[in-house]
Every structure is written in C-alpha cells, then in structure tokens.
Length: 433
Ligand SMILES: CSC[C@H]1O[C@@H](n2cnc3c(O)ncnc32)[C@H](O)[C@@H]1O
Ligand SMILES: [Zn+2]
Image (cartoon, protein in one colour):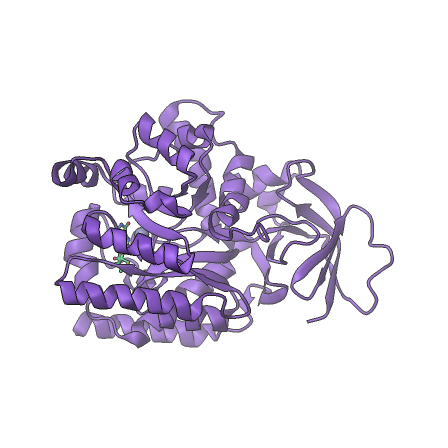
C-alpha cells in the first residue's frame, strides 16, 4: 500500500489533550505512523503527498446499530409505530428476500455509509454471507451478526441458531481483519428465555460479544414484565446476557436502577435517536447514561426507520435532542456528541482500541471533510462546525485500514450506478412477489 503524507491538514483527533490542530499525518500500510503539528522528521521517503489545507481530517464515524439490507425498504412504510411497522410491513417484505436482495440492499447501504464518512458499522440481519461479501468488496469495516427471531417451531429455532454460529465462526477475522462477528438474539420479545440462554452459551464458547434490541418501546417493557415478571434489563441480566461484552440497541425505557446495572456490567448502548423519534418509541436517557459511565455510541438503525444512513445526522440529533427534552443546553455538548459517533462507537465494537482516534500506532480509518464551503466559515471551532453545521455530504475522501475507499466523493471499489440499478430492481421484484 505504501505511504501517504498529509500536509497542512486540520486534524480533529478526538484525543482529549489535543483535540484539533493544523499539521501533518503519515500513513504506512494500515496504520497511522505519525501525526503532529510539525512536519515528520525525517520526511517519509517516496510517500504520496496530499495537500490537506482545505480539508478537516477526523476518525471515521462508527455506526453501532443497523440492518443494511433494509435500505431496499426506505420509504416503504413511514409514520407507523414499531409493532405495526415491523409486523405488518417489514417482516412480510423481508420474508420475500432472496440472497440477491440482501446483497443489493447491503451494497446500497454501504455505499451510502462510506460516502457520508462511516468507516465501521454493526449489522444484524439474515443471509449474512451476502452482507459479509459486500463488506469485503467495499473495503469498509463491519461487525456482523446473524440476528435471530425465535418466534418459530423448535426445529427452525435450532437451524437458525446453528446458522448464526456457523456465520460467526466462518467470517470472524475475514477481509484482512475488517470483519468481526457477534451473536444476536433479535430481542427479548422475539426470543424465549431458554433460547436466549443458548445464544449466551454460544457467545461464551466462541468468545464473541452479544448484540440485541432492548427496551425500545414502553409496550415492550410492559409485555416483558407481564410475561417474565421482570423488565428487559433484569431479564437479560438473569439470563447471563451481560456476562459477555454486550452492545444493546435503543435502551430507551430505562429506570435509574437499570442504568446503574448497565453501568455496573459494562454494557454498551447504541443510541438511535432518529429511528426512535420516527417510530415514536421515545427518547433515551442519554445524559443519565453518560453520567453513569455507560459507553453510549450512535446507530442509524435501518434506512426503513430513519430514513438515512448519514451518521453526521445522528451526531447532530444526539447533540440537540437531549437539550430539548431536558431543558438544559449544556447536556451532550458538541464534542461529546462527536465522541459518541467516533471514539465511543469504536470502544463499543472494536474492543482492542485500535480505531476511533487519530494517533500514531492506530489503524488508519479516517475521513477528510471538505471545509472549503460557506457553512464552515468563519473557521473558528471545527468540532462545533462538524456537529452543528456539517453533514455527510461534505465528506470528500475516506480511508479504511490505510486504503482509500472513497475518493472525491465516489466509492473506489463499488460500481455505484450498478448498485442503484440493482436496488431498484430488487425493490420492484419484492413489491410484485
Ligand atoms: C433478523 S434480524 C433483523 C430484524 O430486525 C428488525 N428490525 C429492524 N429495525 C428494528 C427495530 O427498530 N426494532 C426491532 N427490530 C427491528 C428487522 O426488520 C429484521 O427483521
Ligand atoms: Zn434495529
């Protein structure tokens, strides 16, 4: 891959001691080898040079919850609550998916994510080999997991669990280590307790993290109490779920005791503000979670409930929403929202701390934002501008694992025209089927 020397760029490192400065960065193969205000000394011989003077460089965004292939269902069902949306609209359409649809939807989503600055994403879905192939091709980083809905006869449950384990084993560490896997019962309301326990066992056996939807709606919490005599957090805790590194999506309806328990067990939360607003699920208690020491990152959920996979939007919503509902303008300040979209996301999913900040020795997963535009002027506080004024549309270049995967706004390894065509064809077939 060789070396890249970025000169005179504005670097937003996400490091606490030196968050932003103008300077230089050197990439060798998959790693950052130098970052600093002064030029590298000695100068990297033979390195490709990039003038960074009109660009802001920051760690790639990390999307910690989604279902990429559902991008085919973008706009198919708006303005419904979760239960109606899932049971009457999503699940009937998903039942008609074939491998080619999952591949088409995943490529569409990955193109959208890469072009808007996401370098790593979590994906929970079915037909995950297709998603993994798409990740491999596009050059993005993926934490992939076969999500399992257990509302089916025992022999089907058995087959789904076996498939989840097979996928997790086959793909962990693939694509030069850009793919990692997890184990995922879909939710406490779609998987019986003894079935969830088998996923926990599998996660132990394979030494993998767990991921699930949890406490997304009030109805879910009430149903859990009625069926199992416990709220979802206590329920999952009793089933041993939090004995593994775990990432829960949504966590909207939590009481103080549940927040304390999640903090105590080291559970990471993927906050999905836009999806939660659109499905009228509620607003997660993010300021309290952060105060309790929970790692809170950001997810888009799918393009069918968002309807966009630009994580910059999620960062902005996270910064604004909690000010609005608490009446306190100091909660989730811009820098904290940006940490949720980068370093906290990295911490939640990539447990070896090799991504999420710009620092020598870290993996070279970073993006270049075109700040030579009116909405970045006057150039004062770059973090404020990125959060409150910027968007994924400003992303010019993206690197993952030291490899440039977006150049001048175009995906290097994807045929975007073909992807749009295939996505449209898949959707039309699904409608007719
Ligand atoms: C088979 S795993 C993926 C499964 O999850 C469904 N899904 C998408 N968004 C949500 C959400 O916000 N809450 C719960 N479940 C969701 C999706 O339709 C798939 O069936
Ligand atoms: Zn989801």
